[in-house]
Length: 321
Ligand SMILES: Cc1ncc(C[n+]2csc(CCOP(=O)(O)OP(=O)(O)O)c2C)c(N)n1
View 1 (spheres, protein in one colour):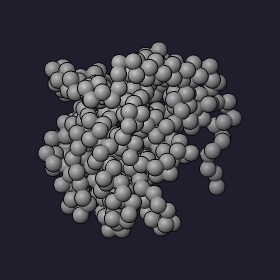
View 2 (cartoon, helix red, strand yellow; view 1 turned 120 degrees about the horizontal axis):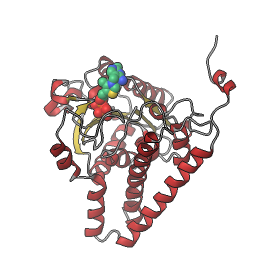
View 3 (cartoon, helix red, strand yellow; view 1 turned 180 degrees about the vertical axis):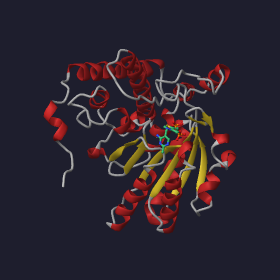
């Protein structure tokens, strides 16, 4: 990796961070309606993993999907417009925060049913294998999806048919207000869940984008060369509440715990590494900050000035027999 590669990782992470902060602000101003789940604190996972795949590989995620979509390269203006429910949005304003899709980038969506997209990831991998396409699927989900039945069906078929899918469990230790200990039997080593299906599994520090990317650069070629699925547990922490309806630390975790975890901010970790190893200087980082600030301002302006979908659009893209 050269200096530009490091700066690119930093830029993507900062773009997600600033996008999310601005979304929270826009939600408070009622420019965004419905649910809004922020990815702040978890950026290193999407950015590190997606940096290790090719443009025609597939990515699929849960309702906490803005980060994955932006890491995949979607235009922040179209993503913000989607959050605003505008006709210019990524899904013409009909999907909103939890249902972003960018088919042109093989970002196959955010899904709001916990665990519901794991079988879809297995299906995408089956299609790639059946049609002899050289693609892998990255499937991101929270540890709350692990105990769901469909997750196990997805693991089983992926292992049985040696499908090219990498299941990436973003273990932020809470599913809404429920600690992982109260929901997942193998909570202290959840990778064992995958190993019981014969799926090789690794644990990685999900706050360290370089660790995530390095691991994924080893795993992706194995999966691509038909060796079958992989499972990654990326340990992380969400710095915000579960959604905008949940205060930052809620009743289920202490303020001290949140403050402690915030000391390992993934952006600060990367910044420190780059400065310490002379991979970037203060001026480079300031330039990235300025670029990102401009991109976010442009996204909000675009979303704000865009029209809402016309009434007739209700009947477009609806399947009818
Ligand atoms: C099948 C299903 N059950 C319950 C819910 C309600 N619900 C929404 S988010 C959530 C917690 C999921 O936690 P996790 O998968 O760990 O993801 P995180 O929010 O931590 O990223 C629950 C239970 C749902 N959306 N779908």
